[in-house]
Image (tube, rainbow, N blue to C red):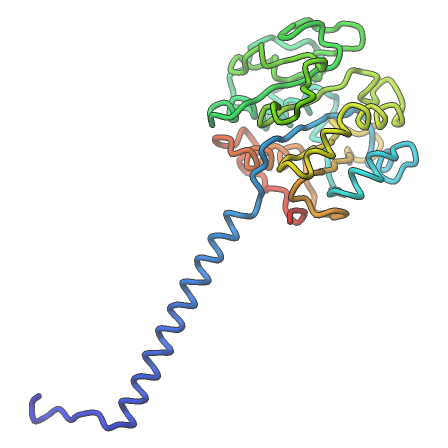
Length: 298
């Protein structure tokens, strides 16, 4: 030590030690906060093993939510799950909304005409799920046979099945609803269920559609709660009288029972959320700039 440097007196040493300890504590706290923030961000959405999405038809929010004609949707799915009170379709009529929900874009469709099978190559939920090494299928009521590309057959309508429009989605993944498994553990990671024109409330009543969901997906919904899985019930569009505000209910594991969100969401938000829940690769179309559905997960 040179003669110009003086040793710290005991009080100075105690002060320096205290400052050093405080700095260390702040640094440790900052590190803990950063780790917590990272964990919270990563845990913002659950990672379900199975997601089943059922799409119903042409009813406004108030025609279903709160209606005595839909006791299963209201008293089981809504009461035990999450209700999106400001959920909206993108446009009219049906077909462009199905494309929006599936691929983040209406793909330029403006009507309900038969699709050009395999005409699009854009990214979509199925192609992203498959690219991530996960499994995908659709279950279509009244589809004549697995992979059938017929435009219509009885109460079946191809306009509600956007996957046929994409060349990057295997035709074999379009199954009949009779192929929906009874052993739910064998379901794909992500699947869509499309009821026929009566069961989806298009040609038949709200009560008919509500009963169809209960009878055909109620057992899955109950199973999903205890098996890390989800059921999403949404609609393509409203009745053209309510600003395209539609019912959307989410039920199953990790959903806070009786929760609701008044945030404005649309089909692009639902698609974005499905992509992120399933670990799909990327975000298709307008889903890339859409926000995830939040505030309903526990």
